[in-house]
Image (cartoon, rainbow, N blue to C red; front, side):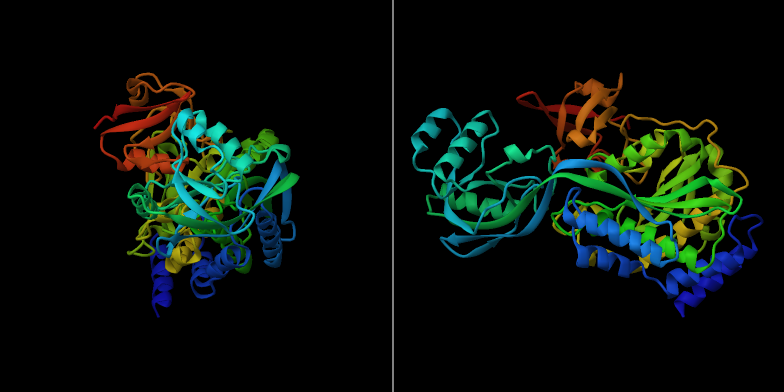
Length: 544
C-alpha cells in the first residue's frame, strides 16, 4: 500500500511540473519497477555474499567484472563488455584469517592485515614479547626469536633489520594496534614476485591490543596464535572496467555516464564501498531496459576498478578517450554508501537544467527529500567522477543522507551486506534512473558555462566548504603533491612530500577518511604527518 501511495504521489507531483525531461508515464514506470520489482538487493547479495571482496588484482575482482557484464547482458544490453585498462605485476588473494590468545587464558582476537602483505603458512602459535626498540635490545634477543610474535614493531630503520632477523630465526611476525575498534584495511600494490613480504604485521582492535599489552607489561607469559592466509599470484594481472550502453535515439554519439567502482578493499565484503553503488548502477540499467526507455543520448553504464588505489580505472579510461570528452554531458557516480541519494550539486549555471531533470523527485518522498544545490566549483573528494571533471565533463558525486553510519563501515571489518539499507537502495535507484534519463533527454548537453574545478582538497562528501588547501595523491597513501598559498595547510607548515597520517586524533588512510576528519573535527586541531623519517604533529586552524 505504501508503494502504491508513493507512486500515486509521484504522478500528482508531476502534473504540477511545467517542464521535465522524464514524462509522467516514464517516472511512474521507473517507480513501479524500482519499488515493486526491485532487484537491487539481489545484485548486492550476489556481489558481496556469493563473490565477496573485490580487491584490485584479486581473482574475485575478475569474477565480479565478468558477472556484472553478464548481468547487464541479461537485461538486454548486448553490447556490455570488459575493457582492459592496465595490469598489476602481482595479484593478491586473501584467504580466511583468525587470531586468539591461548595463554594465560583463551580469548578470540579481532584482527586483520593489509592487502599485499605477508600471512602465515600455518596456524602459528608462540609467545608474545615486546619488540626491541634499539640495536642493543635486538642484540640481546638474537637467537631467541624463533616461534615468537613481537608486540609494537619499531618505526625506525631498526624495523628492516628486525624483520630480517625474524625471518632468519623463524620468528612469526609483529602484532600492532588499530586506532580504535575499527580495523581499517589498506595496502600498497607495489610488490614484486621476486621480493615478496615474508613477515606478517597483524593489527588488533585497540581493546584487544590493550588487553595483550597490559598482560605482557604485568610479566604474564602471553601466548597468541594467528592463522592468516594471504596469497600472491604472479602477473601481470589484467584489470578491467565494465561498460554497457543504452544507445541514444537522436544523439547516439553523446553520453551520460552512470557508474561506480566495482573494486573494494578486502577486510570485509565491500558492501557499502562500493557494492551499494555497483548494485544501483546495475539496477538502473535493469529499470531503464525494463520500461523500454529510449533516451535521446546514449546512457553509458560504467563500473571501474582500481578506484581504491587512486581512481586508476576511470583515469586510464578517460585518458584513452580524452578526445571524446566534449561529447559527454555528465558523469553520475554513486560511491557514498547506502544512505539515500538526497541531492546533486552543480554550478549555478547548471541549475535550470538540473531542476527540470530532477523535478519528479523533488517532492517524491517527504521522508527522503531531494534538492539541487549550487556550488562555487567542483572539488575533489576521492571518487571516479573526478576523472571526468579533470577532463572538463561535469562529474557529480551524489549527496546522501540517512541513518547509516558510513564511517563505521568504510574500509572496515563491518562493511558487509547487513549494513545496506534496502529502502534507501530502492529509493536511490529511482533518483539515479530519473536523473540519467532526464539528463540524456535534455535539449542540449549540460552546460559547462563558468564550470570550475578546484583541485585543492576540500571538505566532506556532504558538501562542507572547509578546505585544508592541499592537493593529494591518494594512490601514494595521502602524500601531499602541492600546498595552496595562504591556506590552513600552508599556515600549518605542510610541504609537498609530506604523508598525512592523522587529523586530530583520527587516523586517515584514504581521501574519504581525510575529508570526513577535516569536516567533522574542530576548527582548531592538528595534523600528523611523516616527513622523511620524522613524524610531526602540526597545529592547524580553519576559518570559521
